[in-house]
Image (cartoon, rainbow, N blue to C red; front, side, top):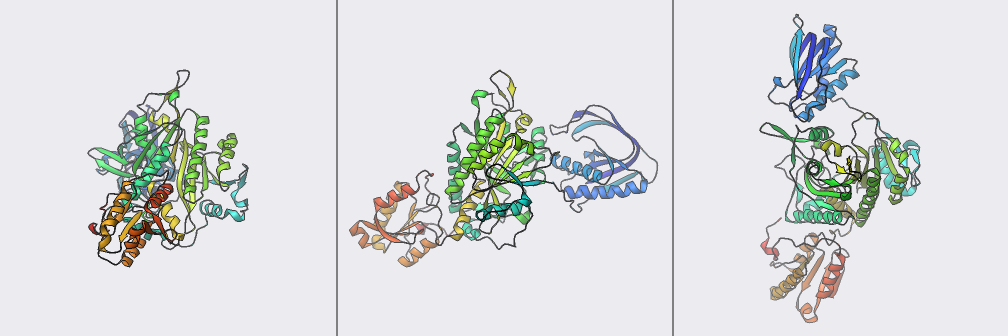
Length: 604
């Protein structure tokens, strides 16, 4: 940060016109302030909130020596050629203002993003003009005083400190202690699921930024199948859902983009393109909202959904990164549901709430839920709605009430958490009621009376990001004696092993017939012993191992080893096909792009 600090008799400025869509709101009138320190401030690329703290510490020293207690923070781009993006600049300037006010300094902050008429008179003494270069300083912790309650199944609120947990509420207790009571768990070892992911070529990409994953052929297939499954779930909702696609970067000089991005703060990725600063999206919101503002909508079109599996970017802290769970580049299956009004929005939230719970239960898990509210008034006015939500919960819910005065755009934000193998609450699914972004982005519809209205928008990730969906599945397997991916998701469902080269052609025919039935089968044609091939198939988590020899050809029965049970049995080919089709019914079906013969594949 660079600050030209001037001790002035007066400063007078008048906003003339906006330089960018992201400019702050301001009146076009003259502002005059007498006897103050004028801080002509350029916020630079590497600055953060700690820079704001350091800047005010430096300015405070000057105020003491000059016997002045008034500053004007004035955005001034001309001191640097490596300026921060508009969202970061506004955030840091506001932080300077906040810290100064907390320290008892009288502050005026000129609006950001305007061309302004400016005049001032510098006092004539040696310390009246100083150029300061401000680096990072210590971080000032901002505490948001949230209030926590437990919402019981019958709709009663209990202060969280007074709640008494039942024996069956151990998982809920973990959430409450972690989120509300500040109880820190023990230092956890490396999660066991990580080695399972690496088995399928799912790991960090070391030649990229931190927090970026890569997927080998098997992991890539798993990721694609998860995407297809989430898309299938979204398509089954009882209102139209329009699948869209778009770009992953948006101009921070656009007002709506800047305002929405400011809520994300320092977690944004920002790139420069010629004279533009662009933010990489952190969900599908920017693209869907930018697109739908151009649609002609009527009340007859509502409710409807917009959906995209959006490549998204979040600048998570390096110390919190965790493969598959907390990453910097993710795939977010982002559903937005556009509703006529709050009553319709509440009905659709209840519908999504049911789907979210039922989908995690298909994986053998139960959610513990955190309901974030911007006011208790919303709860009191809509108590029947919350009681309806609680009918589907397996436990009480944790209520978090945010303090007033923050620029919220949502009324309710539900976080659905699992308790993982290491006893930590981990957020997976979400639903949010958004009352602010439709107007911000200019999304409107015409109601029954021909009047322009702004819809309520629901944000939902039914099964979380694809990475977190995958994380839940692998975390499930940690306690299994013979861990195996669900049959529908397994890259190779059946491996056919001939007992010798004599039976290779017959084994190949079986594998090909299975493939014709959309069963992912392959053939181990390598010159190894049967025992070694079986052992390799087991360590590769193949669901069914089929051994083919003289006995199988004569009897017409296949010798099949099933991984999940460890049992060996004899079944006909038709019986095996029927069993697999039954177990995978309702899930996506897709072939994997691998050679039939194991010998033809590279090691991965």
